Image (cartoon, rainbow, N blue to C red; front, top):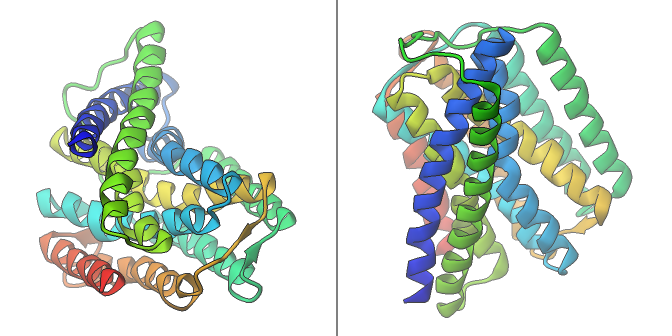
Length: 312
């Protein structure tokens, strides 16, 4: 009963947090005259990746490396297979060419860098973490230097600058609510999963990763409802880049992460690479530079197959 209560409270906090974060992100982009996709890929992505960061550092320090790795790999699969799927089922997204010339290639490069570092020796070393964080820093410098619009934005009428104190307040409240909500949700979900005697890796790539992807889901759904699609797509691509380069990078700098369950390397990591690659053809087929409901069904189908095969 307590676990269920944690899950419900966690979800409520996450939805509220997503709304506050989005308000502050839109206001910040207006105040600084920065394209919303850049805000989505920096401020929103970092705040919605905070649960993964906190969970991964704590798990690695507590001696549960598979929880740290499985959480990030599972979250990246969930961001595209679940969150992006639900987002485009609610409303199609028109994509500009900078999406496939910059954002998607960087996400694939980050995925392949992580794959190269962990696949052969089954460990993320401290120096590899430093390289990952450096790559992220260089990407952010590039992003802010060449501010670009990667998604068609509908410029809704409710875009209005907020006073600075409100902007900071919403940013703080949003980030805190997302973090607190994720903590409650994970606590409840892991509690339920443990009752059924499921392994640490399976809990990480399914229950925990869905739990830590809920902030992205909340932020993205609210973004679509408010017609802020630039933030919803930028948030997801940015979040996957942050999860790999910042979350695993920072965690491995603090303490090296070693794979315990080899299924992570023989199965989960290939699902992550596959679904990340799949986004590119979906953007072009059947209608060029658009993600629609058909793409949402395909992505959701892939995600459900991954979850089913992992659990069974």
